Amino acid sequence: MTTNGAAASEATISVRNVSKWYGDVVSVNDVSFDVHPGVTGLLGPNGAGKTTLLRMINGLAEPSGGSVTMLGEAVRNNPGIYRRIGVMPEQEAVYPFLTGRQFVELNAKLQGVSDIASATDRAIGLADLADTQGRAVGGYSRGMRQRIRLAAAVVHDPPVLLLDEPLSGADPRQRMHFQETIRRLGAEGRTIVISSHILEEVEAMADQILLILAGKLAAAGDYRSIREKLNERPFMVKIGSSDSRSLAAGLVRLDTVVSVEVDGDGAIRLLSRDVHSVQQAVPKIAHDLGITLFRFEPLDDSLESVFSYLTER
Amino acid sequence: MMLVFSLTMRQLLGRTRLTWIVLLAAAPAVLAAWMNLADTGLTVTDMTNIIMSNLVISAVLPVVIVLLAIAAFGNELEDRTLSYLMLKPVPRWKIAVPKLLATVIAGGGLVALSGGIAAYFASDGDVSRALVAALGLFLGASAYAAAFTWLGLLTTQGLAFGLLYAFIWEASLANFLSGIKFLSIRQYTMGVMHGLEPSFFDDRVNGLLSLQAGLIGIAVVFALFLALTIRRLRTMDVP
Image (cartoon, rainbow over all chains, first blue to last red; front, side, top):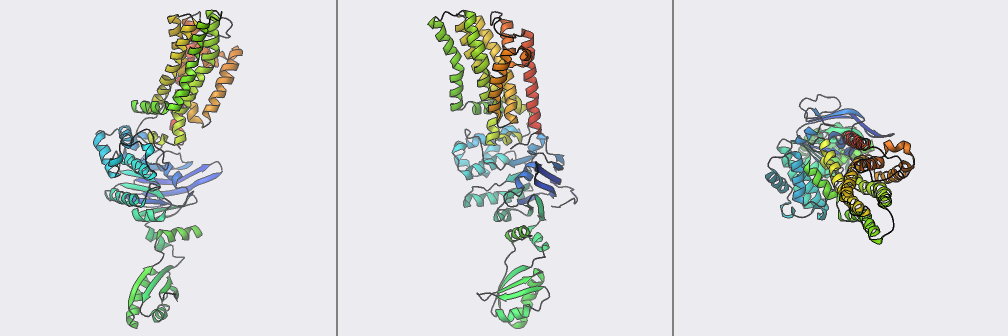
């Protein structure tokens, strides 16, 4: 994934200077990025502009400015491209009078799939809904509706999947099944974009993230790489050892260490701007001082910390 | 297109909506049968004017069609299911045309049947007048359906605007201001019926158009609003 005007060669999705405004309200502001095969998480708090951005990517909404191309073609007013795109929109609505199987079949027929029955079987199996496919969708639980909508989105076996808040309403078991499915589909070489405001969801599935805040692209790339780039604020690392006070005295002399303290549990909490140098230095210092290390744990190497940090900036 | 057509039919003909529409559409037939049996002393022309002009064409036809046509896209917009159709490799006209046809066949068929039966009783069992009434109403329904289908895609307040249009423009202004007869689906419908069967309506009905004018008017409205509907589907932001 590249951002803001970087080379777009072989990108599956290319978003260039895209903006969307409604009257005086700017929903998405001059966003540019490329998406390549694999799973990419579109992450941001509610109201950040994720859904609007995804709707411009899938062609449902016209950008007020900028352009979106997918697989080398414009998406807007290009219905033919949907043969190669599966979209699961944000809304949970389905046609309540159709059974789950009829709903997936409807999507397969509209996609022009040649073998409707086997494509439907495959998609329903992937969504783990074979047992309930004969029930009217109107009677499905929220999680089941999400899964039947996923089945409908993949029934034509598209190379690109755009999923807006796909885990909304899913229970923990469904969530795990869904995450496994998405990881598998991504590993098969598909380009998958998943929007979510829940950090753990994205972290569990996505190789790359696009972080949207207040309609702007705040960060893009591998989330750990992003975190490392955000070196204005130090990393916090928790170190457990046989003699925390002596080890802390040794660590405080390192140039990259901002502060060291021993917490109530007797563990060291170390702030550093360069976690790699600390990782290399700590075992050496501990060895020199004859101290045994029990653990070395980055406390904020997660999307949560990236998200919080960028929100606070 | 059959897929979208059958899907729209299932959406339009939900039990509650269907009940109200059948009751509304059946009213003229029931009234005409009662007037025929009750020996009201009215002439065939009087009964035709009262039932066909004042009731069927001015009220039942536009109301039944507006209820169905607005829902053709309005339901999808309200439920946010239109994206399931729009995110498919289907040309937009293949979404607009079957939705319009479903409205025409469901609503136009119902009004034509009811109006035909009403005309049969109003004209003392004249089958040819019943058939002309049914045909004229079906054509008028097609024009209304095209206009209201577009309206349903344009605004979430389509039903209110549609009813205002039907009662203010069509039932009131077009009835009294002969100058706007060329812009009235009601007048096109009556022109077709009168052109095919001159005994339909007499000179007490203002501004009757010729058969040709009525047919051209209906064709223009149908084609214009179908084109606008397709254009709207291509340019709108789909919720």
